[in-house]
Length: 191
Image (cartoon, rainbow, N blue to C red; front, side, top):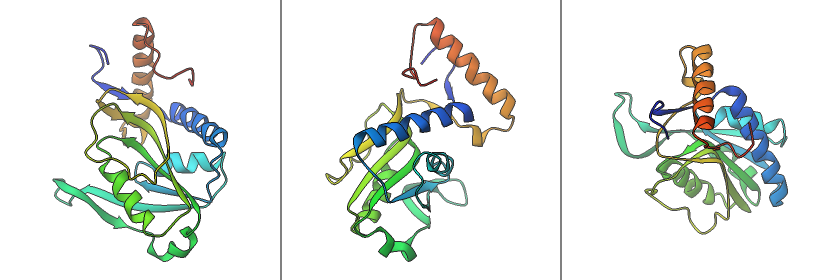
């Protein structure tokens, strides 16, 4: 992205604005979700924010790529799933939300599981799509994909992971200022 910042900082305010813009894009597309499925833990906050604009029930799923030993696994694993609401998803429009599309493994895993419930349609929403080769592609049933931003493959610092939220927000402001000095507009006028 630039020499000074090797991480991409995102504040709560920016996330709110990104989600609001995504809600408008979803409405403009004609997709009308019946339910929201949030992938935890990164999809929880964007899902809750979008509920302000698209008032639908939220179901939460937990997926992990890491074991209790913090070692990376070769595939995603269910931590918490929504088997008990299977009938509430059959024939419904499902909006699947996560914070980032990195390797796509987690998203594709969830899509595969949700397709077994026979929804009418699944749309995928992410705050950030990393511009890189994905480990897996979505199945052809996924026709709607809503990334708020497409960014280089770099570490994203979300506010819910910050130790010092004021410092985190300051670093985002500094990063945005630096990007503007470089003539880069990555937020597409959203912020």
